[in-house]
Length: 345
Length: 68
Image: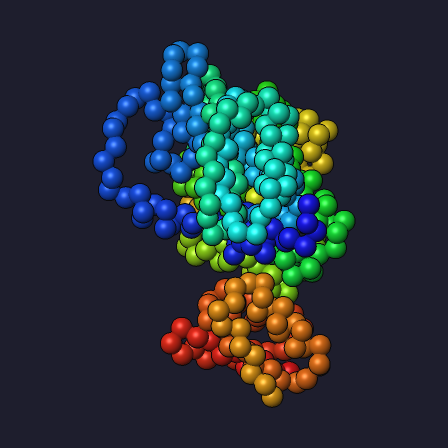
């Protein structure tokens, strides 16, 4: 492989930071005719992680797709991250992924070895997840893109939606924030290698383990924190659940290096889009710094799960999560619907 | 003082441009950017380094006067 190819330089934005804003998406999708089908348990209406369609009384099919431009220069890492991120939507529904299709765009300047390494990364994560990649589609395009369309299964009564949080619930986040800031700063060679190694390891980690633990408890709502950031996905959870969310800033796990880099202006464009979308629903205490808010609006790639579950189960669930996932924390709670959807103190 | 032209660049390039310029440790810089994200990020970088920023907008372009 040629060492001088920097994959991230072939792309104008990185990872889930490339995602079109939430507000723009709902405008784009407005007014189309769609069939009503009671078997469609989860569709567009609540901006959930995947769609869910009931096949019979014990099985529902879960479908999702996710793809993005390079977030790492190492093509194998990039492939792994893109696949882990695509699979994550299935785990966030409490489901088990089974089949996947490759989605790929090739740009000028990518040699055969680079393309193969990206695919090898994708296949390695699919294999780890017990998923079969059964086909795909590849085109030539201006920028490299890779991801998967994933199909999974779940019992119709065990679907975990991004809505359904109840007052009194505790919120658990399973991975630290700051990925968008760190990958933006890495493009400017502002992040030391060991830090990025830690960040890449986090992004390639499947949310399967968090799903395995969480499904042992009575979970009311779950989503994965990706392009719309903690506050964007949190807002969708709060509004869809008819509740307000109370976050304790000091309890939220994030990469310390990202805080410094955000205050230096390495804030991805996606974070500003997320702020524009979510800010009207967010109240932050005076002492919350601008850099902290940047991190809460920072788009995550292959981010962790945000889990809403009863207080009585939260400590036990967290202890089990921590055995596998050191960064998991209880970051706040759910309350009755108030003036704002999210309060940060 | 040279005016830095960061038009047509997206982040993190404008921040890198002002960062390199500031290695000369002068008291004033001026940079032109053409999007709100670069305006915000260059402002953050300047303020982080103890400068204050005055922004003027003209036809979607922002001129940042950076001083200390």
